[in-house]
Length: 136
Image (tube, rainbow, N blue to C red; front, top):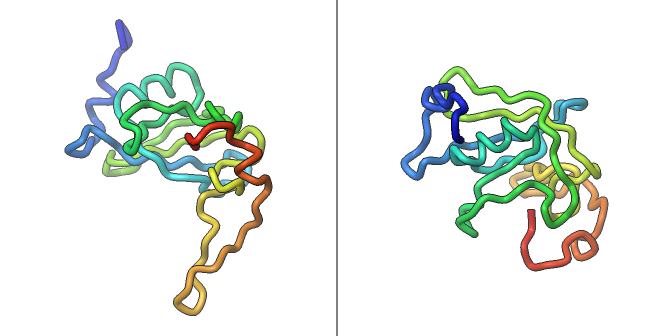
């Protein structure tokens, strides 16, 4: 974040931890793929590289989507909502898998008769995707 104008980030409403929810949406189908968190550095890196970078709250560090799975997200567009408190990333999901469970989308559970039902198939066994204990 050296000499690049960061005023556009100042207009966003970051939470008390300096984070902002980020929704990744497939550029072709418009399906919501996942939700993650971004800090200022993650958002700047995403804007600079057109590759999705998020903030892992559990690990306390940046993670580049696909760094361990190979399922990267090429960012075509970055938007914010009318309240400027969430960002939307329109992405091309490489490898066709966004979820660490091996599914296309993280939003694969539907509420049916007051129970969560899995509605999307596992496209690839997560054990064959990840070669370490970390998941992205």
